[in-house]
Length: 321
Image (cartoon, rainbow, N blue to C red; front, side, top):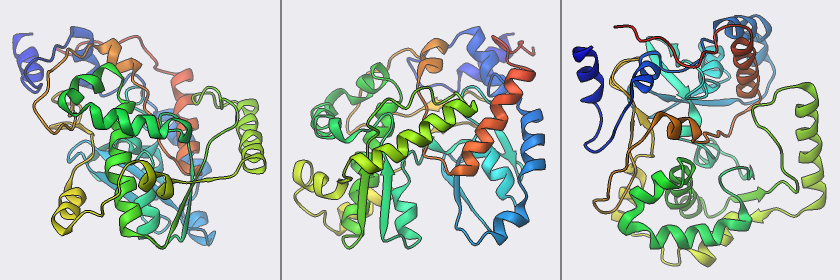
C-alpha cells in the first residue's frame, strides 16, 4: 500500500489531498467500462458512410498524454474511435485508447471550439450557449474574471471546473477568433428554456431538446459575440508579442503521466501565485464537464451511457494493490 500511495500522491501539486477512493478512481480512469456500448456504436456507425455523406465532420477529444486536443475529421481512419473518445465523459467513462494513447471528453480543451471552425474556413459560426457560458451573464462574467486575477486559482476551485473553461473561452478562444478573423461572424443562441438533463438520452428527452432548439431559433435573434466582446472587454488590439503569447497559452486541461497511472492534475491558469485548495473526490464528481459535440459525439455518449446501465457502473472500482 505504501508504494501505491507514493506512486499516486507524488504526482499531485503541493497542498492537494487525495483519498483512498479517489486513488481507486484514478487507477481505472473512470467509473464505467463502456465496452458493450462501444461495440454497439461501432456496429451501427460505419466509417464508409461518414466519408460518402459529403458532410464535413470534426470531432475533438483530450489526450491524457499531452493534455492537448486531438481532432478527427470525416477522412480519418480512426474517426469511429475518435467519436467514442469524444464521448468518454470524465469522470464517469473510462478513457478511450486510440493508437496506444488515452483520450477523454474534448470539452476539457475545446468546450466551444470556434477557432477550429474558423481555421477550417467557416464564414459564420453559430454557437449554442449552454452551461457554463450564456450571453445574459457574459458581461458580468468578464468583469468578475478581470477582478479575480489576484486569487483566481482559489476562486476557480470554489466555483467548479466550468469557470476554468469559461476563462479560457473568454480570454483565449473568443479573443483569438475576433482579432484573427475580423471578417467572420460568430453568432450565439441561448435556449429560451432550460434544456434539462444533458445525461438523459431517452427519445423523449432528445425530441424535447430538438424542439427547444427550433423554438429558440424562431423566437430569438442571435447575439454577435465579437461585438459584445469588444464593447465590454477588449478595446485595444494586442500587439504581435501579445498575440504570440496568447496563441501559445495552453488551455486548462487534465494531464496524466500515463494511461490510468499517475493521478490527473488540475492546472488553474493564473497570472500570479495563488492558494491551493484541497480537491476531494466528491468535488471532482460535482464538477460539470460539458462539451460542444457533433452529432456522432452525442451518439457515442448515448452508446456509452447504455453500457453503464447494463454492466459495470460501480460506486468505486476496487483497489488493485
